[in-house]
Length: 180
Image (cartoon, rainbow, N blue to C red; front, side, top):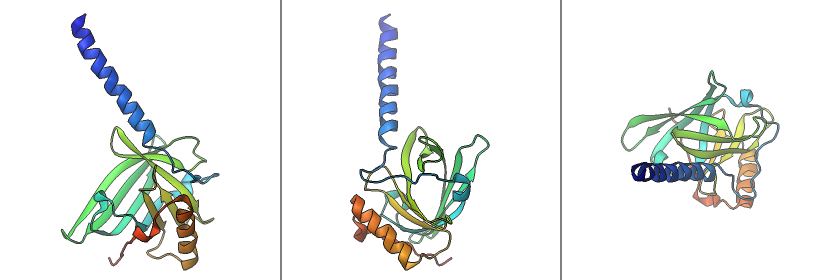
């Protein structure tokens, strides 16, 4: 019986820890509201990363794109690709996204290393699904995306203003170069 307890207690605590970590990492920043009446099918396809913060996993990357497609199980496949201009090589990461609540709310969780999930919240998008403002679970994570390599100044200003109002320091944004 003592052997079972020695195994069961740590395993149970580990599972509980993973559940807590999982729940905490898929939040949305205070003041941010995910897009309602979201149409996942219109969101699918290729997006160009226009701006982001300087994340370790995207360090020294230009020409960054994200391509979303629907899996057979209804979840979304995520393929991120970018060129590391220091190492002079292309990098790619494939993951999966799932809706946190109803698919009509643009709150998702994404994983590139299961069982670790992170928040992916579309908090602004134009009517034609050409430009999107995406945030993570805190004000440490933000992306501005476009269907093309550029974004109109009016959309840029709209997204920057929204991000500032939530608490993002938009002066720290890296504006991604797309030269390939």
